[in-house]
Length: 328
Image (cartoon, rainbow, N blue to C red):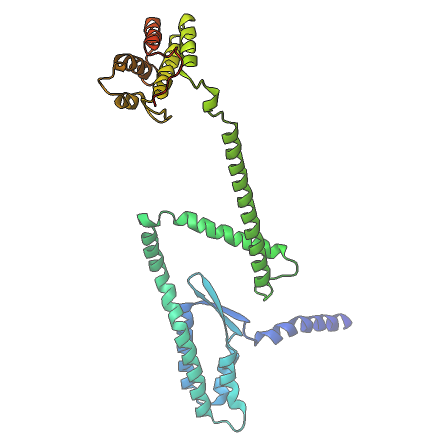
C-alpha cells in the first residue's frame, strides 16, 4: 500500500508540469515573411467570424508570445502582445463585442500592411542580388574589392578600439567621444611621423648635395700661360686627352684676355667660334683646337698624340705663352 501511494505521488509530480504547460502557447513561432502575412490574413478572418468575446479570447490563447519573421537574410521579432490585448479587451464589462472586434481586426490589418513589404523584399532579394552582381562586374567597379577591404579594415580597427577602451560597450553614448579622441590621437601621430620622414629625406638630400664635389673656378688656372704649360706637360707625358683639354682652356683664356669674348661656363665650343669673326687671323688655330676638344670631350673620340702636339703648337702661335695684354 505505501509503495503504491508513493508511485501515485511520483506520477502526479511528473504529470503536473506537463499539464501546466500543455495549454500554454509556444514562446515564439518562426515563420518567413510570406507565411507571416498569410497567418495574419487567416487570423483577421477568424476574428471577423467570431461571434463572441469568448471565441476571441480562445483565439488569443493560441497565439505565441512573439513571431520570428525571416525576410531574406534578416530576422525580425514581432511581439503578439498588441493583438492579444485587442482580443482580450472584450472581457471588461463596459466593452461591446462589435467594437472590440473591429478594433482587433484594424490592429491585425495594420500589422499586415507593415509585414507585406517584407514579403515582397524576401521574394525579390535573389533577383536584386543578381542584378547588383552584374552591375559590380562592370569595368568601372574593378576596384571595389580593395575599397571593400579598406572598409573591413576600418571596421576591424573600430572593433579593436571598442574592445580596448575600458568599460565601453557598443551602442552606449560614451563610445563616440572615445572613438573621436582616438581618431585625433592617431591622426596627430600620423602627421608627426610624416613630418619626421619628410625632414629626414630633405636632410639626407642636403647632406648629399653638400658632400658632392663641385667645380670651383678658383681651383683651375685663371690665365692662358698656366693652361698652356699644363698642355705641354700632358703632351710630353703622352696624355693626349688631357693635353687637348688644357690647350682648349688656354685658347679660351687667351682670347678672353685679348677681349675677343668673355668666358661663360654654359657656352659651347661652337658658340665661341661664332663670336670670333671669320676674317680674324687667329680663326684657323682656334677652330682646330676647338673642334679637336669638341670631338674628344663631347663626341667620345680618342685623340692622337700628334693632334695634341699640333694643338700645343697652335698655342704658341696664339701667344698663350706671352704675358697677357688685354684690349683697351
